[in-house]
Amino acid sequence: MTTEFAWHEFIPSVASAIAAIAAAYAAFRSLSISREAHAVARKNTLVTHHGQAAAVLARVLDEARGSLKVLEEAAWHAWVEWPSRIENAVPDARSQEGSNLRPLRHVLSDCAELLCEHALQSHGVRRVRYGLFTVIREGLPQEGTGEWTKLLQKGDGRYEDFATTFGAPEPRTLLSEAAAFRWAVFQLQRRVKQEDWLSVWAASWKNDGILGHYGEAQRLAIGVLSRCLEQLLAEQKRLAHSALPLENDPVLAAKYEKVVAVLDALRDDCSLSFLEPYQEWRHGRDALAFIIYGISLGVLTHKLIEELHILARD
Image (cartoon, rainbow, N blue to C red; front, side, top):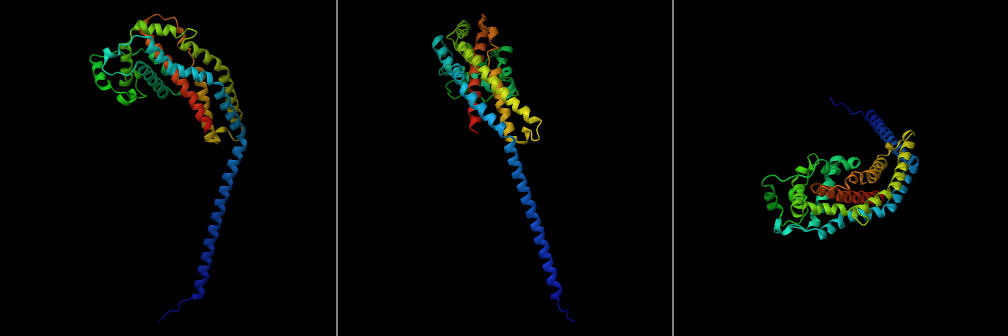
């Protein structure tokens, strides 16, 4: 027996299903549009609410960058010019210690750059001076038996930076154990006599000395650095108890944290406070560590000011 298909019953069912699907899609679109509208509204509210904070940050960056030109120049002199002056001022046993060693100025700057980078990675920007101070607190490494010969075989005649030749020091290990740093330090110890390093150290504090000039520039910058920090911290505090704290805008909040950390380091960690007690030091065995620390301050300061330029462009 043949059953006739009931089209008059099927068509309304299909139409009802289509209508239900259409209604569900319309509801979904409505919800999606509502969410998008809510997100846009929230974003607009954040922009309005945090507009002052963004303006304060931009103003602080402009003020700091404009006021730190003298310090930036002094840092460059400590990083680049001082090693060149030293190279021209002291007898260098370069040819006696190897066949094709890098110039003394390169060894000094490379050694200081290794110290600065390791201090930043191991201690962070806010405590970087404690990382730098390890060369004074712990002293410079001393050669092990046969160690110089092994390092010389690998490093003599290589003109890339020492981290490329020997590997970059690991942040979680002591810098004094890193082959790249030991190679730099051993060269400096072998090529220049202790009494010559001591003479360089004493001369650096004179009125026309590199550290004397750097210290004056850094002291002059403390006022503007403190003022800029106060503005940023006051703005963070103002927003902390508002309906939309700064953390509600992760990008702006992260930028605030970076700028505050850099300004704080430029004011405190880049000072000569850890070196000044040793101005009149007359023990030649320690002078090289003081000089490496001093050059690394130039490296650090210049890098931090460059970071402010980058943050201002972002």
